[in-house]
Image 1 (cartoon, rainbow, N blue to C red):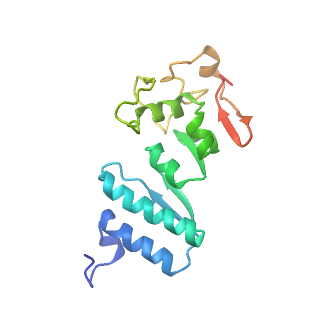
Image 2: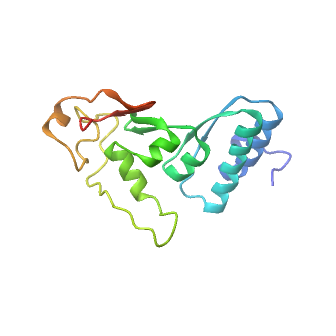
Length: 175
């Protein structure tokens, strides 16, 4: 698949993932970052995340995994930080976050995911409006223009991170 004359910057993303995982294993890399490709097939995502998980378990590699599919992120992560417009809105152990998402944006990400079983029903949290510009974010809570629970305080005051459970922090005026 990789020709002898190809150089890393010329290799397509989907072709470089597997050699990158092999390189990490053979060179004792201790930290790596991966970004989820939302357009890849589910089977390709499984191979990539399985390779990352294997390296994490056998060699102790730490990962910064960037993605929107929280099921995939939770599968290979011990802790998850959820960001909106460049700010962390929630941070928790992956099992805690999956069981009890608190920030409305985190809840929306989970409800947007496909259910683990076809007959499973879960409450949908609908987010309306356009994503604001990261160059000119809204005042107060950056999520307030799209939040279904927004209060007047949200527009004028940025929420602070509060520890609502052991190792579970959320930046939201609801808590």
